[in-house]
Image 1 (cartoon, rainbow, N blue to C red):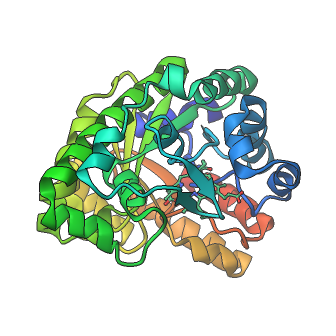
Image 2 (tube, protein in one colour):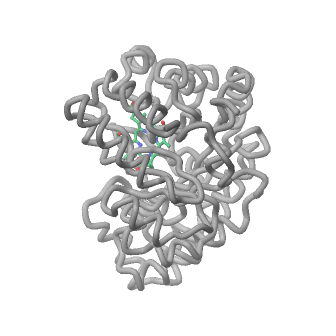
Image 3 (tube, rainbow, N blue to C red):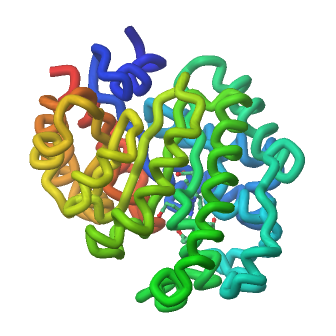
Length: 341
Ligand code: CP3
């Protein structure tokens, strides 16, 4: 058993030599090597050119020793294939937010091989360049998180436009979610066909609703997406703000549940049971603290993950740009050392 097997084995609940770790947003601005690429190319250019996407995808694998690579891209990319025009500044900004029935009508369902071939070329290139060192994770935004950006047109504090559509024009909301869900299914299955060895569905905004509204407006689409996937690879379902929603989220299916830091990992494991693995859940800001604290918190989370069917160490959300790289290296070492004990 080796580094190459750890992540996929943990996802499947199979034996591992130590706890595997990867980090959400692991290729990013905290790495000087990433900033060097970005000094010469825009963010969208890195997403659109397979050689550049491949280069930055491999950076954390080589520099940090993480146990999986994640495709460098963004959850907004398949929305270009639906007909949306998007810029990054630094977060996504849509030229025309989707607000009316006519706006939804105009959207196409993304055909990945025709509309975003560069993503699938990147997957194939990265698999070749990885040469089996570690597995490659593909990803998509969940329908609700994608719809949130499409309707708001950018990030939002209260998501007024999205929620107004949901409550006041539910037929428009549901028509949008139908199209986005179909896009997500095709997009993830195309990544799997191109060589992605696991996929993560990011529902960054799934936690902004009451549990009853989550069950009514989000869950059916997450369920539909997971049921529509090629299940020869493990599916990780990450919902930020999952703590109070876990009983609903479990019913969406998948292999591993992503856990953020607002719930203690031991409690999450107890609630999730032996049907799913868990992934998480260090508060990303702990990496701004002293190295000793990073190591201590890493050990605690490794212990809390032990009773799980499988545990993949990760942060509870994406890594922050101001994190010292040495702390990230210390985290990876601490997880591997504690997990082997
Ligand atoms: O995890 C990885 O390393 C793979 C690459 C990846 C990026 N974005 C690269 C990125 C992934 C999986 C994402 C997902 C993503 N993108 C999500 C879901 C997960 C999450 O973090 O909540 C969301 C909501 C987005 C939308 C998005 N993209 C925002 C809000 C921003 C701006 C915030 C920020 O961190 O700057 C982006 C830009 C973005 N996506 C960057 C990167 C590396 C920074 C771009 C730059 O280099 O300037």
